[in-house]
Length: 420
Length: 161
Ligand SMILES: [Zn+2]
Ligand SMILES: [Zn+2]
Ligand SMILES: [Zn+2]
Image (tube, rainbow over all chains, first blue to last red; front, top):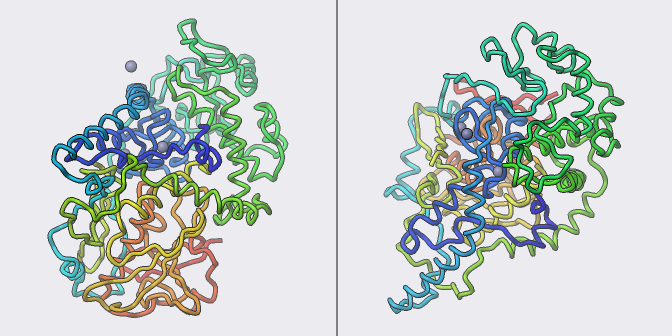
């Protein structure tokens, strides 16, 4: 995660994008491939990929952040929950392999295009870094505008998005992570409900007790005393290692396979939250919303890291560095209207000032890294007419979302379909 | 989240500035930082807003893209909000894509295009019901307003407590 802050961006300048690759005509499939290995939330190559119940894949941290903001899949809008996240080591392997190959393939593709162009006698500059095309309907822009106007009263018009409706709630069993001290391996999944506070699967008959206890799991297999012990170990980051089969690799000694359970903060006093933070060597300053936000963030970052293959996990020191950046970023931006606002301080204008210069550099770096060839001539391929009511980049580009606007019964229905 | 947001925005900006020119009628006016961007929106063709130009202001914080940006029309000495049944005279916009229907897979440009087509499809220039009341009490940040996007009633905002 050491690559996510403005500072690091400036140092690494590694903003990458499927458009780094030549287009379909020159290098079939490469952009699609690069795009397919990217998370549709952050647009980076998957980091600790997980799948939601619907099957869509995101970085673990992106998925967790999304679910805490809104418990649906951002692509298909089906319900999503942390308890149903499943790791996707196969995707991670693909990403790791692609990371190793990407620069090489990019060079090959670029060289190849240069060679082809030389053979064709096409001046290089007529092939600038391929321009993003928008697939458009053949209609002219004006026709399109007309096509969305209808006879009905504008009062009833409605700008919205029709989501794929799915009432079907697939049943999923909870993730069984090896080493999770509280999952009782023998208990059947039937009759379990997801705890609204900690998102773990809890036997329905015990859910109230579970909630009252501040999300301790009921003593099914383990005794109370044992559980207490497990809890304290867990919070101290020293949960027992499970099994000798665990891959050692270069994983830190203090790493474990056990996720930190979510905490129901409403039942905790400030002091108790501070204790939780202290047990993880985290800052204990700030007011209650900040304390809670900090602990939540740590739980997300920590647990997301466990969704890496063991060989890809970060050391605790890196996770802590990530927390420091989070604290900085949190102090620096402040216009949201939620509880976030409360804890924000002072440094905004200073941050802005600093950020301004960095911003310019950042944007400069973010610009397409043209393979060092001039590219000032007009766009090459018959650029399709742009129409402003429909974007469709899915087949050629990394797809952000497909949007089409149509008129239905006097409602403007913006249809978003981001499934490529 | 704080860390995703600057990277996401810098990618979006790079695309806007260098890859695709934005669709016709959408032009980037200002993006000096990761907090406020302003676009000029114009509806071309045969619409009620022919010849009018509007400023569309985006405000971001570190919850982007998990939470929608705060989006409103610029209202100042030089610019006015369009007269539209879903746009208040203070520039606030009632559009579900900016609230309940936001998804992090959407983008700044997707919002621009949606708003542009909202204007393009307008059949009658009129203010939203309750405009004056809303404008008197509206928060600075439109995200603090909870808009109701019911199909069958005119949109009516209620301030979140
Ligand atoms: Zn991601
Ligand atoms: Zn999905
Ligand atoms: Zn397997």
